[in-house]
Amino acid sequence: MKKSLALVLCIALLACCLAACKAEPKQPAAANPQPSTSNDDQTTPATEEPDATPDETTPDDTTPDDTTPAEAPKIMFIAKNLADPYSTWLMSMCEKYMNENWPEAEYVVFDQQADPANTESLYDQAVLEGYDLVVLQKVSGSQDTDALLQDFASQGVRSVVINNEVSDGVSLNVIYPEYEMGSMVAAYAAENLPENAKVCILKSTPSLFSSEERAQAYIDMIEKDRPDVEILDTQNCEGWSKDIAINVMSDWCQRFDQIDAVLSANDGMVLGAIEAAKADGRDVQAMQFYGIDGLADGCLSIEAGEETGSVLQDAGEMAKTAVELAQQLYNDPEMDAVKIELEPVLITAENISDFIEMHRSTGVIK
Image (cartoon, rainbow, N blue to C red; front, top):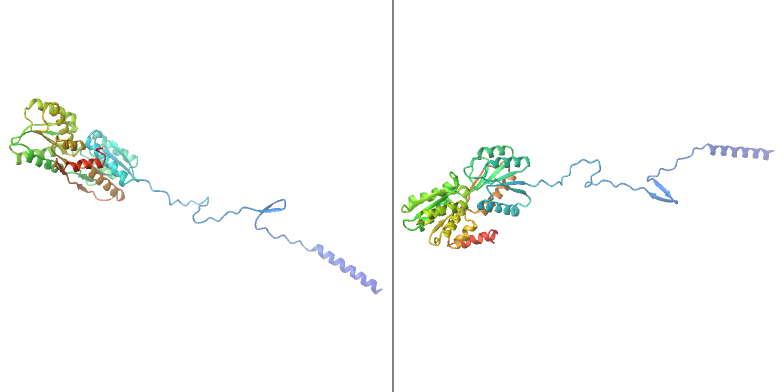
């Protein structure tokens, strides 16, 4: 009996245990931190995106790029007339010093073709195309640009004016003093002209400031230092034209049996006079010819014993100074207006080799 009761109790206890096991809730599997895919029982982890570093930009990062290069300076050069030898020399020297001393700048050279009506339209273009400043060779010293340059300065385009004087209060200015250049070569002529010499004077366009100042220096020398000298005639050659000077000298050769010297306001015109005198059969070695500028052709003529003397208006020095001022103005757009006068140098047969070498060093004489 007891054995039967014990057996029954054991069976009942076993049944309760089985029921309890069926009622226990199933525990969830642990979450997998890296999703995976199964391929033939091989587990491949998903690609993990790297954390962005301070030097990397996430797709939604709108921070501007601080490494964007600054825009290059834009400089416009405006030439008086590239058909004129001195203007060509001056602009070629400006290009040389831009390339050597300011290579990161962009620049362009425009030609006014000796027409002052072109000046304003080129400045309009400078404003529209975003040029930072203009280097201007005025058409002439008589061209009134004060109001024009003041207006464009107020629009953010200031100027470096070269080869002609300005007094507009806003522009930077590089010049050779006109009357001083004329006086320097006139003083040399006063020492060398024969007694009772008969001379002719060549000037450029009537009322042109530079031409008038230079020619006046010749006249003042004759009146003050050489009253024995006779001025046979004075003629104008529009636009410093060598061709017109040839025609003028040809006419003088027909009119005057004796011409001891030609005093010219620049080298180009006096070279035309020499050419015409040769064509007339005159002995140019026995005559005297004076000019101004120190052009390469003038220096070669002095070396050949034909032109007697000139004064260097050094386009290289003027261009170098202009580029330096342009750099200063670009870096300090509010800088005060300044005027720089460069020192002219007398050129004669005694020192001509120095100036031939100068022109060779810049490539003007090959």
